[in-house]
Image (cartoon, rainbow, N blue to C red; front, side, top):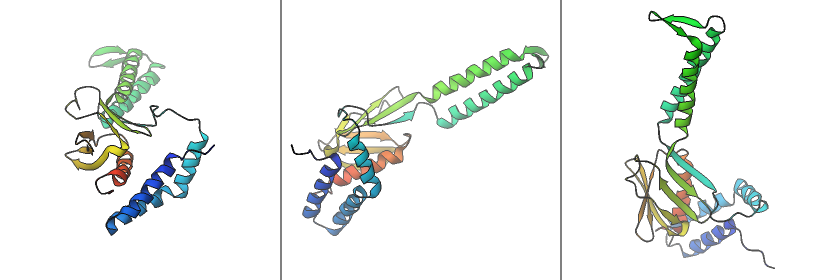
Length: 210
């Protein structure tokens, strides 16, 4: 029984085909760089590791990117500050649970509990996601959760349908073969990783590929 080509082998075959059809030298250089990247020792090792893992359905999650609902600096600073006050109050409460603040006697254990709750709240806020990007072997899907990015155009696109990318006004616009445009905010966590992958797909299947 003949072995089926891997995804990497399929991509390399597509690149070789487009190299033979390339009409100008810049296009050839871009394709050659992409081919060299896929043939690098790191990519070869990664491909071998993937081949030895159990097969997954195309619909299964491979990579997941998101935009936080609240600014990372806000939730991180709030969590650290609340945790510090909680620990400090608890430390003082061991020797004397009562303290005078503004002319009022306060229980340090209650203060520690309050700021401990705030720390948990800021932690919960940090995992809230307002925008999702899911990538699998077939393509990508974008979704909005909440009002912050509700105005963006979202949907699904297969890698072979990507034609062009454009960064503008804090957004990445992805134009598809059907003329539709998907919009991805550049505030995504690990946005550069996603952009690098999309650049490769646009180079492989986009307008310059032919």
